[in-house]
Image (cartoon, rainbow, N blue to C red; front, side, top):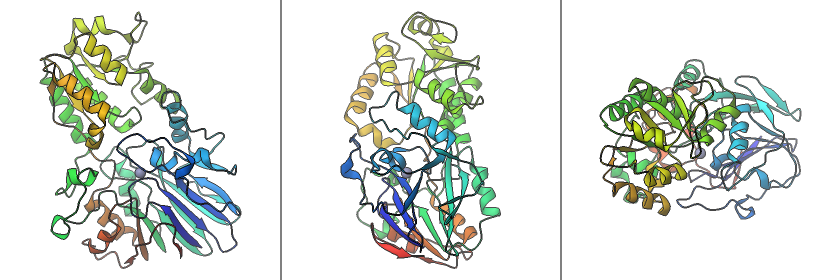
Length: 422
Ligand SMILES: [Zn+2]
């Protein structure tokens, strides 16, 4: 078996990895768009150079654009393996985002249910903890060897126990682990050049991250200490965070007002435990037309703004600005990666909100990715023979991590598009 990282050997996002067996059969894992501060349209020019002969399948680890967004540009129709919920999110997002990705029929993968591709690769997916719903790690076995791909993961979200369980009872004899290192960067003493815009600098001296459960308390405090309306800027697709915001609102005795997009995604996922305005009494759908059951509009919110938490989209923000619901009694909470604040349109909107004397609260956010301590622990427990960093801006920094003695393997750095033997 051999591997090439088409993209992601030394950058965060845009992940695309190919694995070839000795018989010439190949699989691709993830096919994402590179991340950029400002929106760039997915296009053919970002496609890696792919030899289609022998390519039998695409596995998508999770529904984030930096892992699936280029799937529509594959020339050959190949089967796509992805979680059912993940596929539903991508399909639902097509209804409100400019970059539509038609996956077509996909083959659903399930936690710990192994399957075989082309009588060659045995794949075992492991459901994991990440800011994207329905995210997986993959164990790939062929030619008597095994490769483990971590995908994007963390151990401080609402599915942390899945990662902890894996560390307790890990897959054995891993030859190569492809490990994400979003939050791995040289310690300050080791480097002079860290890009200010990168996610890792916001946590530069932190060794472990706050959990979603801890964020819940922070949201609750902010909601309780606000006289008027509370609004939150978050991602429509981050289900962990949605649950956090809902639970905090409930504790603060406020109803949660959601945009239709969030309700639509939850409906498509089909998990009735996720907050939505169909079967949760204390969740409403924001409307700008006359209210129907489960809906709420500006006029009702205006009467008792202290009773609500509004989940923002751009049109809802505009409606609240026009309705003067942003004022000195209100609070605005940012619950996303802080790099997005630099996008021109976002920066303008925040300035507009601040000009109404609305309190701009301290960000309430936790990274979707494992912290340094988790990475070290994970590697010690799974103990791969060779560790190859991916999804990191600083692959070389892996070499000087404070590895625990459980890890007896080697860190190996490979460049994009370089084939290496397993
Ligand atoms: Zn990613």
